[in-house]
Image (cartoon, rainbow, N blue to C red):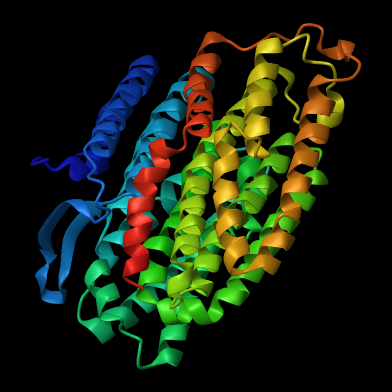
Length: 499
């Protein structure tokens, strides 16, 4: 492609947000329709991006323009099999969130849609940036809109949740900024690809370890990994429905993406040395997240803690690959584990995004998320039950749905490299099945019908339209995973060859 597709994908939402800002606030219908229309542009472009992605696995669609020449900062963007699926996921979930919000957001509409489009730009920017300064700018830009989305349109404890989210993320960001400066001083460049190729800390492992843990902190908070996860449940519970969808579906992936794009290529020796620590934290995240989910009776908080567990699978696959750095016999298992980790990132976005939409659907009607308040709704709201059943089974990893393959690849790769960690992590699958089937399906839909909900209505057309695309991808990638795995594998194979 000759035209700057990544620049268009990234900055069309910014242009749209600025136009929204100039619209009269009384024109709520126009603001909503315009915002949705703007979000379709990067969605269509992201599909074209995926279709035109060559299978070689290298960085493509590159754009390089000098930005601040005095300190060698460039506007350098590009994409590969790692970032393209995440760019598409971002565009898809943003469009669905804006569409859903056009029916549910009633107050301060102009500000909401302005911030949402601004947030979309920040998320795209992280996935396309190949310059550290550019990466950091977009990383921080995404923080501000989400802070306001939680703090203004959130639940009763929204201010507390928003401030906690902001402070946690900012602490990690400051640590990452210091490490980025250290990398620049050792390489003379802010270019992510060039700096990684130079291996700046090969001769000074201790300094490299300090930079490694500084960047690790920023990404681990965002994932979030145990014990840096405590901001997540509060943010999820208080955020509006669309905010929860984007928070779980995309913002958590920014941290995971950073591990693949920056930390592993830049610090392979440190990552290899510290892989056991990271694997332990990943396994704790998996098991602890699932067990805490099982203890929740608030449906939204249950799904929030499930994200801690499911992101643990991503980190386990990555840690397993780091275990085997330098072992030529383990290249296949490394690639499988990393493919599973990236696939799990995508799967979690569509599955947990759907689950948070479904929480919003029931909350709009019942005004409660207490699982004990429901019962026997399968006969009353069969359509809602059907969608929840598919999303729930995908979340617990039922074969035939997308959620299965990410976990399967992670465990297949990890069992060959670090079997003890894989065996302990597999406990999380059992607990996940337990809380999905017992807490969600049993308490909400099965058992005796609670007459309190005699007037409950099934899903509206706009709610069905919001969830159909996500269900389609759960089934499509569950039945034929090569549609996405082939794209991911090319990038992971190339990444491993450079370690």
